[in-house]
Image (tube, rainbow, N blue to C red; front, side, top):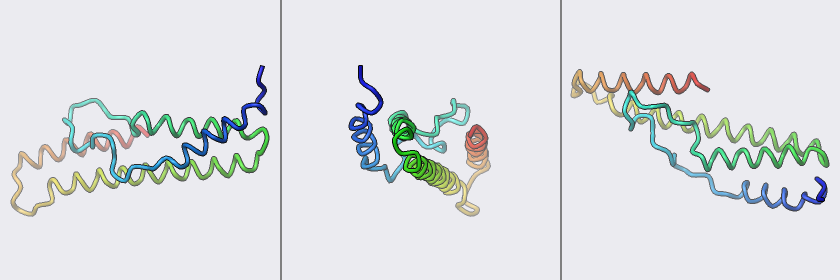
Length: 129
């Protein structure tokens, strides 16, 4: 039977692989502004991205036994990365929404109605965090 200490190389490899995995510069998921306003809310992160974060968290938590300070430092860095990703994602989505209606006087009332529906969906998504 393996002990936690026997699994340390596996954890280190998992953490290293997750840490070096390139982060997408553009959201991989469908943007809020591109889906129907009455559609079901999208998760904040796509499945692979969320799984990667959870894998890293599990490795950090397991590593606490041998190196508590390092585990807390890594947890802080991971949380900071997730918060930045959230901020970037929502900023991009807001910019996309704004571009759809901020065309001066050339926009119809129907386009504005659609924009408001998309904002409502986006707003509801923000409140689910």
